[in-house]
Image (cartoon, rainbow, N blue to C red; front, side, top):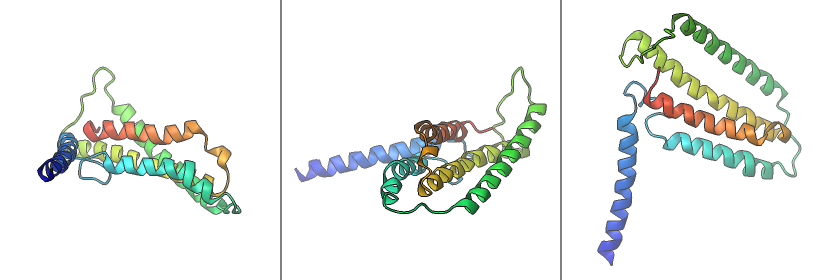
Amino acid sequence: QKNLKSYHHRSKMNVSYFLRDFFYEHADSRIRDRPFMGTPYKIILVYASYILIITKLFPKFMENRNPFNFSKLFTYLDMILFVRSTYFLSYGIYWFLKFNWICQPLDPTDSPIGQLEVRMCWEFVISKFLYTLQSVVYVLSKRRSSVATYLLIHHTIFPLMMWTGINYYPG
């Protein structure tokens, strides 16, 4: 009985190690060591926590409290999001002008252009955390109507899908 229990524990650990190694080894080597990349566990934990916080914990926490006043934070957050969006738009225009519309191969090299593509893709995924922060601020200021179900789905599924593409095929 003891050996069977030990075997079961080891086999569960082996599956965990296998999955971690599988995700990490198949990730693009230029991006897999950046924060939240390589294996999906961290980013899944972040977004699972986000859904739990937005739908259960913070609404319960704010039930008998006055709303927080985040007017200055909203202003700063909107300015940061505007600057980030402008930054990505300018990058997009740059690539739009250089893009080969017939067949644009992926640049898997460590060339400066390849590294720039990887960095921009990673920054784009990380910038999505700002949008989740915006939803948290809405809940804490009791602007619950601003956090619709589709917004939760969009702020969760979209970054996870982007993570998958960027983790394995950045650029």
